[in-house]
Image: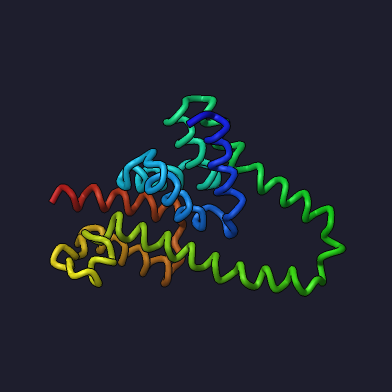
Length: 191
């Protein structure tokens, strides 16, 4: 793969993603893990986790990381610029013609169709994270007859439930929650 092809790969992901970084995760997974096999599923889960805890948008951090691992500094720049280019062009176009299209029924219908698709992409990201951390096998194993390997990792499940409860009940600070979950995970793995 050339630098330009890497740029086009991330430009395609950036062009067809609505809803931000989490909506990009299924597209990243399809392109980077399944189609081009740049990284393994386990490395992909670690990459997304790393992209979440580093400053900046998840998608840009992931594009920069993958570009760097594939082609060094030039790949990091190509991945980052590729992901950013469609957004910059679309926002510039939208700002230039906002007054013309503000009340357009076709545009409103288009956006009303994009919203449920975005929710579906984010739900796919949630399933990906569940399969990579809380579950021992993919959810599809329940329907394919190989459910004997399907279970819940009790440590990760406990942390998930604790974080879900604390965020629902008290809306704790997210940074403190992440560090707390990391500390609890460390302690649980000592057991």
